[in-house]
Amino acid sequence: MKMVIAIIQDRDWVKLSKGLTEHGYGVTKLSSTGGFLRQGNTTIMIGVEDEKVEDVLQLIRDNCKKKEIPMTLYPPSITGLNMTSPPVNVTVGGATVFVMNIEQFHHVE
Ligand code: 2BA
Ligand code: 2BA
Image (cartoon, rainbow, N blue to C red; front, top):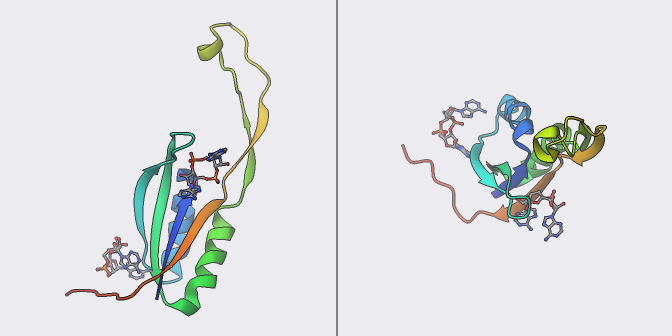
């Protein structure tokens, strides 16, 4: 058995959890914070049989693609000026994934 731990963007959680549960996987979500940007992200834990790891990774790839979103870097609230800089495309998304061996799994009734 493996434990897949993935750090994903908050915005990808709803779609990914839907995909995982529809495929019969158990998943637990933790609210987390990235140490570099110090912004919220989402950490998920998925306990799966070894042979299902690749399927889980594919669901993560399908639902956590990197994407370019337009962002205004210097809004008036920061510059204090009554003008907005043109939006620039910023790349966000993807996932950071760890796969760990699990020695034992118990579901206590
Ligand atoms: P939940 O995901 O909210 O699941 C609550 C209950 O719903 C589960 O109870 C199970 O009976 C059912 N369930 C969950 N996912 C399902 C699915 N894909 N298809 C059909 N039924 C599903 P428990 O199995 O006792 O799990 C309690 C909580 O433990 C879960 O809350 C989840 O947070 C965590 N969990 C369970 N299995 C997990 C796993 N393999 N990996 C990570 N977390 C798991
Ligand atoms: P990513 O590498 O895609 O990482 C996204 C988030 O995944 C990270 O958020 C962190 O919460 C988690 N993460 C990444 N690598 C990890 C690891 N080895 N162990 C545990 N957690 C890990 P942030 O820390 O806020 O980082 C956001 C983005 O900033 C990163 O995207 C990366 O592009 C950049 N970055 C992070 N640390 C950096 C550093 N020391 N120097 C330069 N750029 C950095």
